[in-house]
Length: 255
Image (cartoon, rainbow, N blue to C red; front, top):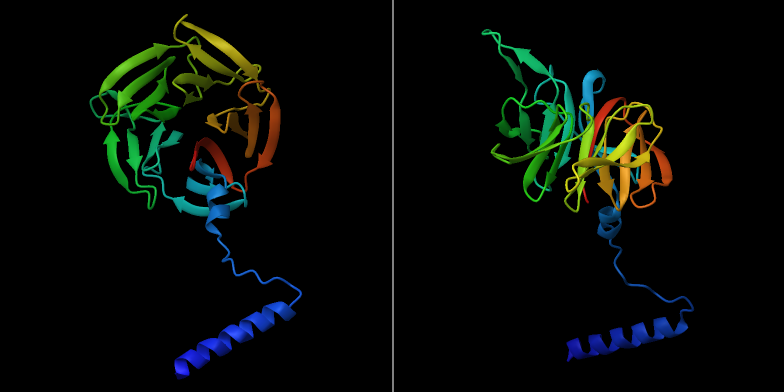
């Protein structure tokens, strides 16, 4: 009986309160996850030559650093990075003279994105560009784009017209690359014709990075994201990256 009276009283109170209150009351719980999921985030590789080296998880939307992973080899020259959603793939251009005089290169590293620990390695590969697509790894070396499995098994190779590729990106199975030249162009690899197709000239010096996100080419120069429309080539924006150091590769965190 007491319970019934309490419920009736509470009901009466709520009806009276809302009928007398001019302002509507919103009981919707605020959900911050939607905003967070819409943030644009990048993995950013900072070379050990100066600044603060490492692999940064960078929130472009908020201009904040969310994490910094150590490099597996502080003496290497890392230039290549991609993220497949579960692992980071890191490559470089440094070489080592072994005791028997054979020139070898640092490996491609598979890294844990939470702590930077090495999961696996693919030995003796020189590269300045890596892209992971359809569960295969593509890397650039000496005028070729090589396709391998994630365990290092050779699949195929594609020759390109320029030997000094600085980075590569793959979108809808189409290969693109950048190199430092007089106009610092972005090139599309036409495998049917065997010729490279000029896509656009960036006129941005010292390009070392190329990525594709939201139908935009994204490159980095002087620690700024530079965006170009993938269809028209229009230069869309320049956004400063709040990181100290030489950025040699970027990879989307959430494509």
